[in-house]
Picture 1 (cartoon, each protein chain N blue to C red):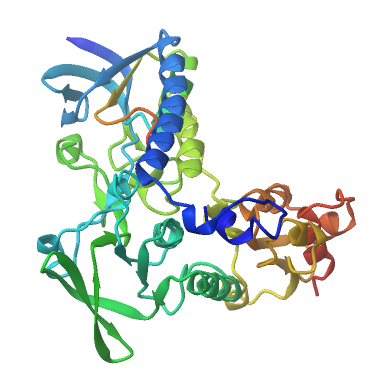
Picture 2: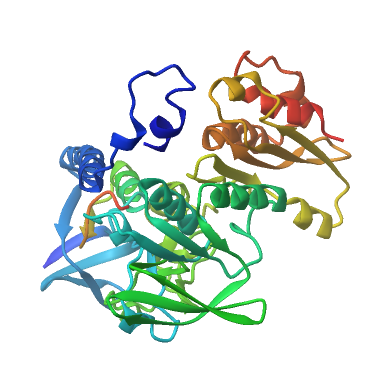
Length: 40
Length: 399
């Protein structure tokens, strides 16, 4: 089973900085996106 | 193209035959796609370089507050941050679904210019698309339910914007409620109640730009224990949802649905999730802009709202028509309006319709962020000749 500290659901202009911040604080992050990365 | 057509001669550009000008929408869309692809490529590079982030493509679905499935893959997480954004609200107008319509997504991907278009909704998206397609050459009807376009803007500014759209050929109808829609003989129609009278409008395309909801379908929020508040995810000032190990940011939470707000929320939710420090969002100064021409931009409180709250105010006003720079670039329509606390001289709000309003607003934003005064703008030296001098003139006029 895959384990992560933080899941960020959505890699738009909000999810991306959230994922980068969590990662920079040392968390193991999974970022999930079903559409286009970067949002609209 | 409208600029070339209408103003080439005025600016001394010789040899432009307005009759020979045409516009290729497919090429404009292709260029837009290249710009978007460039932006996205930078995003992917940043992700590739980050070893602490695993990227998965697919639909996420919570099966419990700690378990997610991503297209069959099972993942266990300690905490989650929802950043799913928003999507157009489902059509509530009878007949609209059957008539067929497009939303903002499709409106940016059309391959052929429609001869006519009815835009339903005269808010942020509605006014931008109405002007854009009217300038491309589409016959545009813009229908707004409120008495003014952009009802959240200052009345002087939204009235002025409405007049500008009308002058450009947009058939604008305010206080107009669409009661039903349909399709007939290859074109679409809407029935509109306007001043107690029902009128019929026809067009090739219907563009619906009326309201957005959180994009949470299929996410399994119920299994996650995350509750909604109306069409949006319920989150508190720490961006925490009703489930204590799940946070939510941006459009999905409703409120000010702007990209820059989501970008602000993201790191705060991450800090709270990873470090449990309970930081709260501060939405005191959230600007927005509408990218019409002239642009409309705003931050802080509206005059009417401030007066309702019983505040003693000074109002600063300055027009672009008196600006040499605005005259030089041929964009003299517009107004700067500042809302100032009469006692402390602190700026409470700034509202701009005019050339580059989307940029000019940031002087007001930075001043408001520091609880600064109108005097600080009025007395500081501004470069001449710039449009920023109009902001300064508005600050000086506050009384």
